Structures are given as structure tokens and as C-alpha cells.
Image (tube, rainbow over all chains, first blue to last red; front, side, top):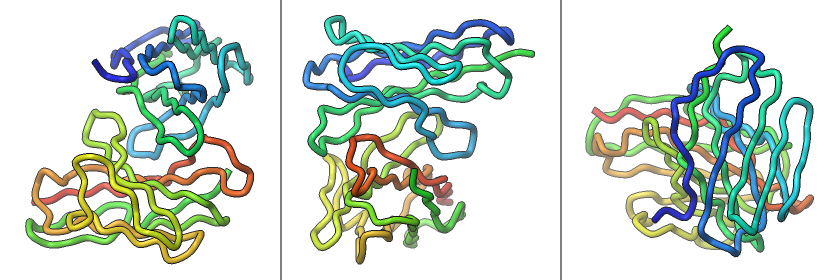
Length: 111
Length: 116
């Protein structure tokens, strides 16, 4: 079993829809949770960074962490074609422990 | 966040040769990391490069194949040695937040390597 599981998709939704992306994990030591967006032929770009459980909102993006269920989510409201990319979850236990990445979900927003 | 550049952005190399990839950051950072991303796959950590000490390699990666230098707090190199077609991949460097602390990492644009 992988430490971090993420559905690779592909996921295709119409413009304006609410998108939900999810990851599950098995290591209860993980405390820091990140979402990265990666456009084709580019490096990953940090979208959201959260610590422990709870919600964090930034514009159209909301990150949720449920440590009791070992489950994290990224919601994208009013999705735009420019949101089409691969989204990677990543997490660490902190204290300079390495990041562990999910497989990435390929998302397409159709105009 | 830090501005990170990598050179070269892409290269096509012959089997058996070596390629050195450079990573430059516009601010001092504590940790620099090297990842490999094979087509359609996620990121795999190769090694962590600390200034003034030997790099720390992950399981499955060895110094003879992927020698790393970290001469100062803003620069690192990764060499892919004695290349084979299986080394064809995107190589990414990333950095931590430096003096600001925190666990998040920021990535460079990547080097796309094709080995023939």
C-alpha cells in the first residue's frame, strides 16, 4: 500500500463546476499538507499549504484536512479552463522530513 | 516564494554520456532537493543537498549515478552519469523556505532529459 493514494483521473468537468480532488494517506505522523498545480511541461506550483486538521480558503480554492479519517481535499469553485492541469497532493511529518507525493490527478475544464 | 532557475531546460543525450543540471535560487535556502518525474508519473525524491555536507540519497539512488554538489546556499548541481534510456525523465530541483522556515517546497521549471 502506498503512503499516499490519489486517483489519477483523468477528470473532466464543464466550466463553472465545483471540482473536488482528494487524497488519502496511511501515515498518522503527517502534519503538513500541500496541494501543487502542475501545467504541462512546467514545474509544480504550490497552491495551498495547511497544518493539521481544518479548512483553508484562498480565492476559489479551499483545502480541507481531516486527520481522523486521513483524508485531504481540494475544492475549486467556479472552475475555469485555465485550471486545467495536474494537481498533486503532498504531505510531510515536519521536522525536515521529506515530502511524500500523491500520483497526481489530471484535470480538464471544458469551456 | 523563491525564484528558481534550472539549466538546461531540456537536452537530448547519447547513451553512456553524463549530463550536469544546474539549479540556481535567488535567495539563500537551507535545503535543496532533487526529484525525478517520469512521464505521467508523480515525483520521486532522488536526494537532499545540504550546503557543506554530503547529499542524502533516497533508497534506490546512489552517489555514483547521481553525484550532487552544493557549493553555497543558492546553488546546486545534479549529474546524471553513464546515462541509459531509462534515465529519460524530467529532473526537478526544489527548495525550502530558507530562513522563513516551514515545510513547503518550491520547484524549479525542470530539465527534460531524453537519452537515446
